[in-house]
Image 1 (cartoon, rainbow, N blue to C red):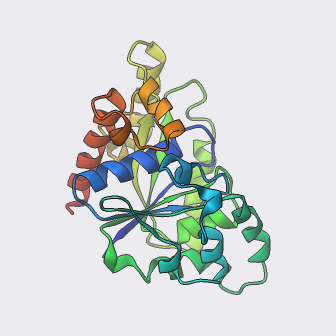
Image 2 (cartoon, one colour):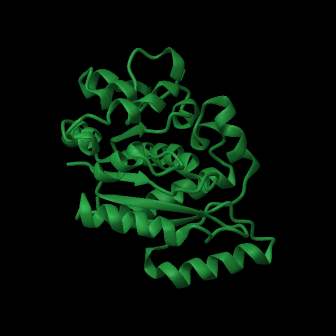
Length: 255
């Protein structure tokens, strides 16, 4: 039975999509069966995995509106062990179209439950906002990974983020947990990255992954080629970091 995880932070530019793409690809590379669901209308996870998001017959939009079975939305055979449900701009209209649905908060969960036995892990990329798409993501998962960038405004909005997390946990998904906090865009040459790391580890303690994701030019280049970093340049610092993270993640889960 798959464990479902949302990559969650209401702040943009913190490495959510980068983590969704590259952690999923690294887990697939070490033999785990992974499904990636792009639940962001920008569709960056889709393009980052080489999917032509505007040329696919079905997407997360169709899944949430209930017009097709989840299996028809899944793109297989793009990478070994890694399946994808793409997204595109049409998803932006789903929040309005779901307003009158009685089960609007549970649309994604109900779909995911149909395929949980087919995967080890299911990852969901959330949009950088709190709306029905993000609520669906948080209701549909067991836990969240929170990426935090090692920059000046890193902790700005974290209290709001945790308030949102607790609100969803109290009211809709009582089993929701924090899987881990991931430090991203780490630059060992600066004092700032070290200061942010210390502050985050002080605040979240053992929830923070030991692995940190460095600021790395190859990691930044990979999406433009539609490849996860482990396929684009497996010897790069970024690829080694995400592979290390995948192994730490598996060890934490014991799966």
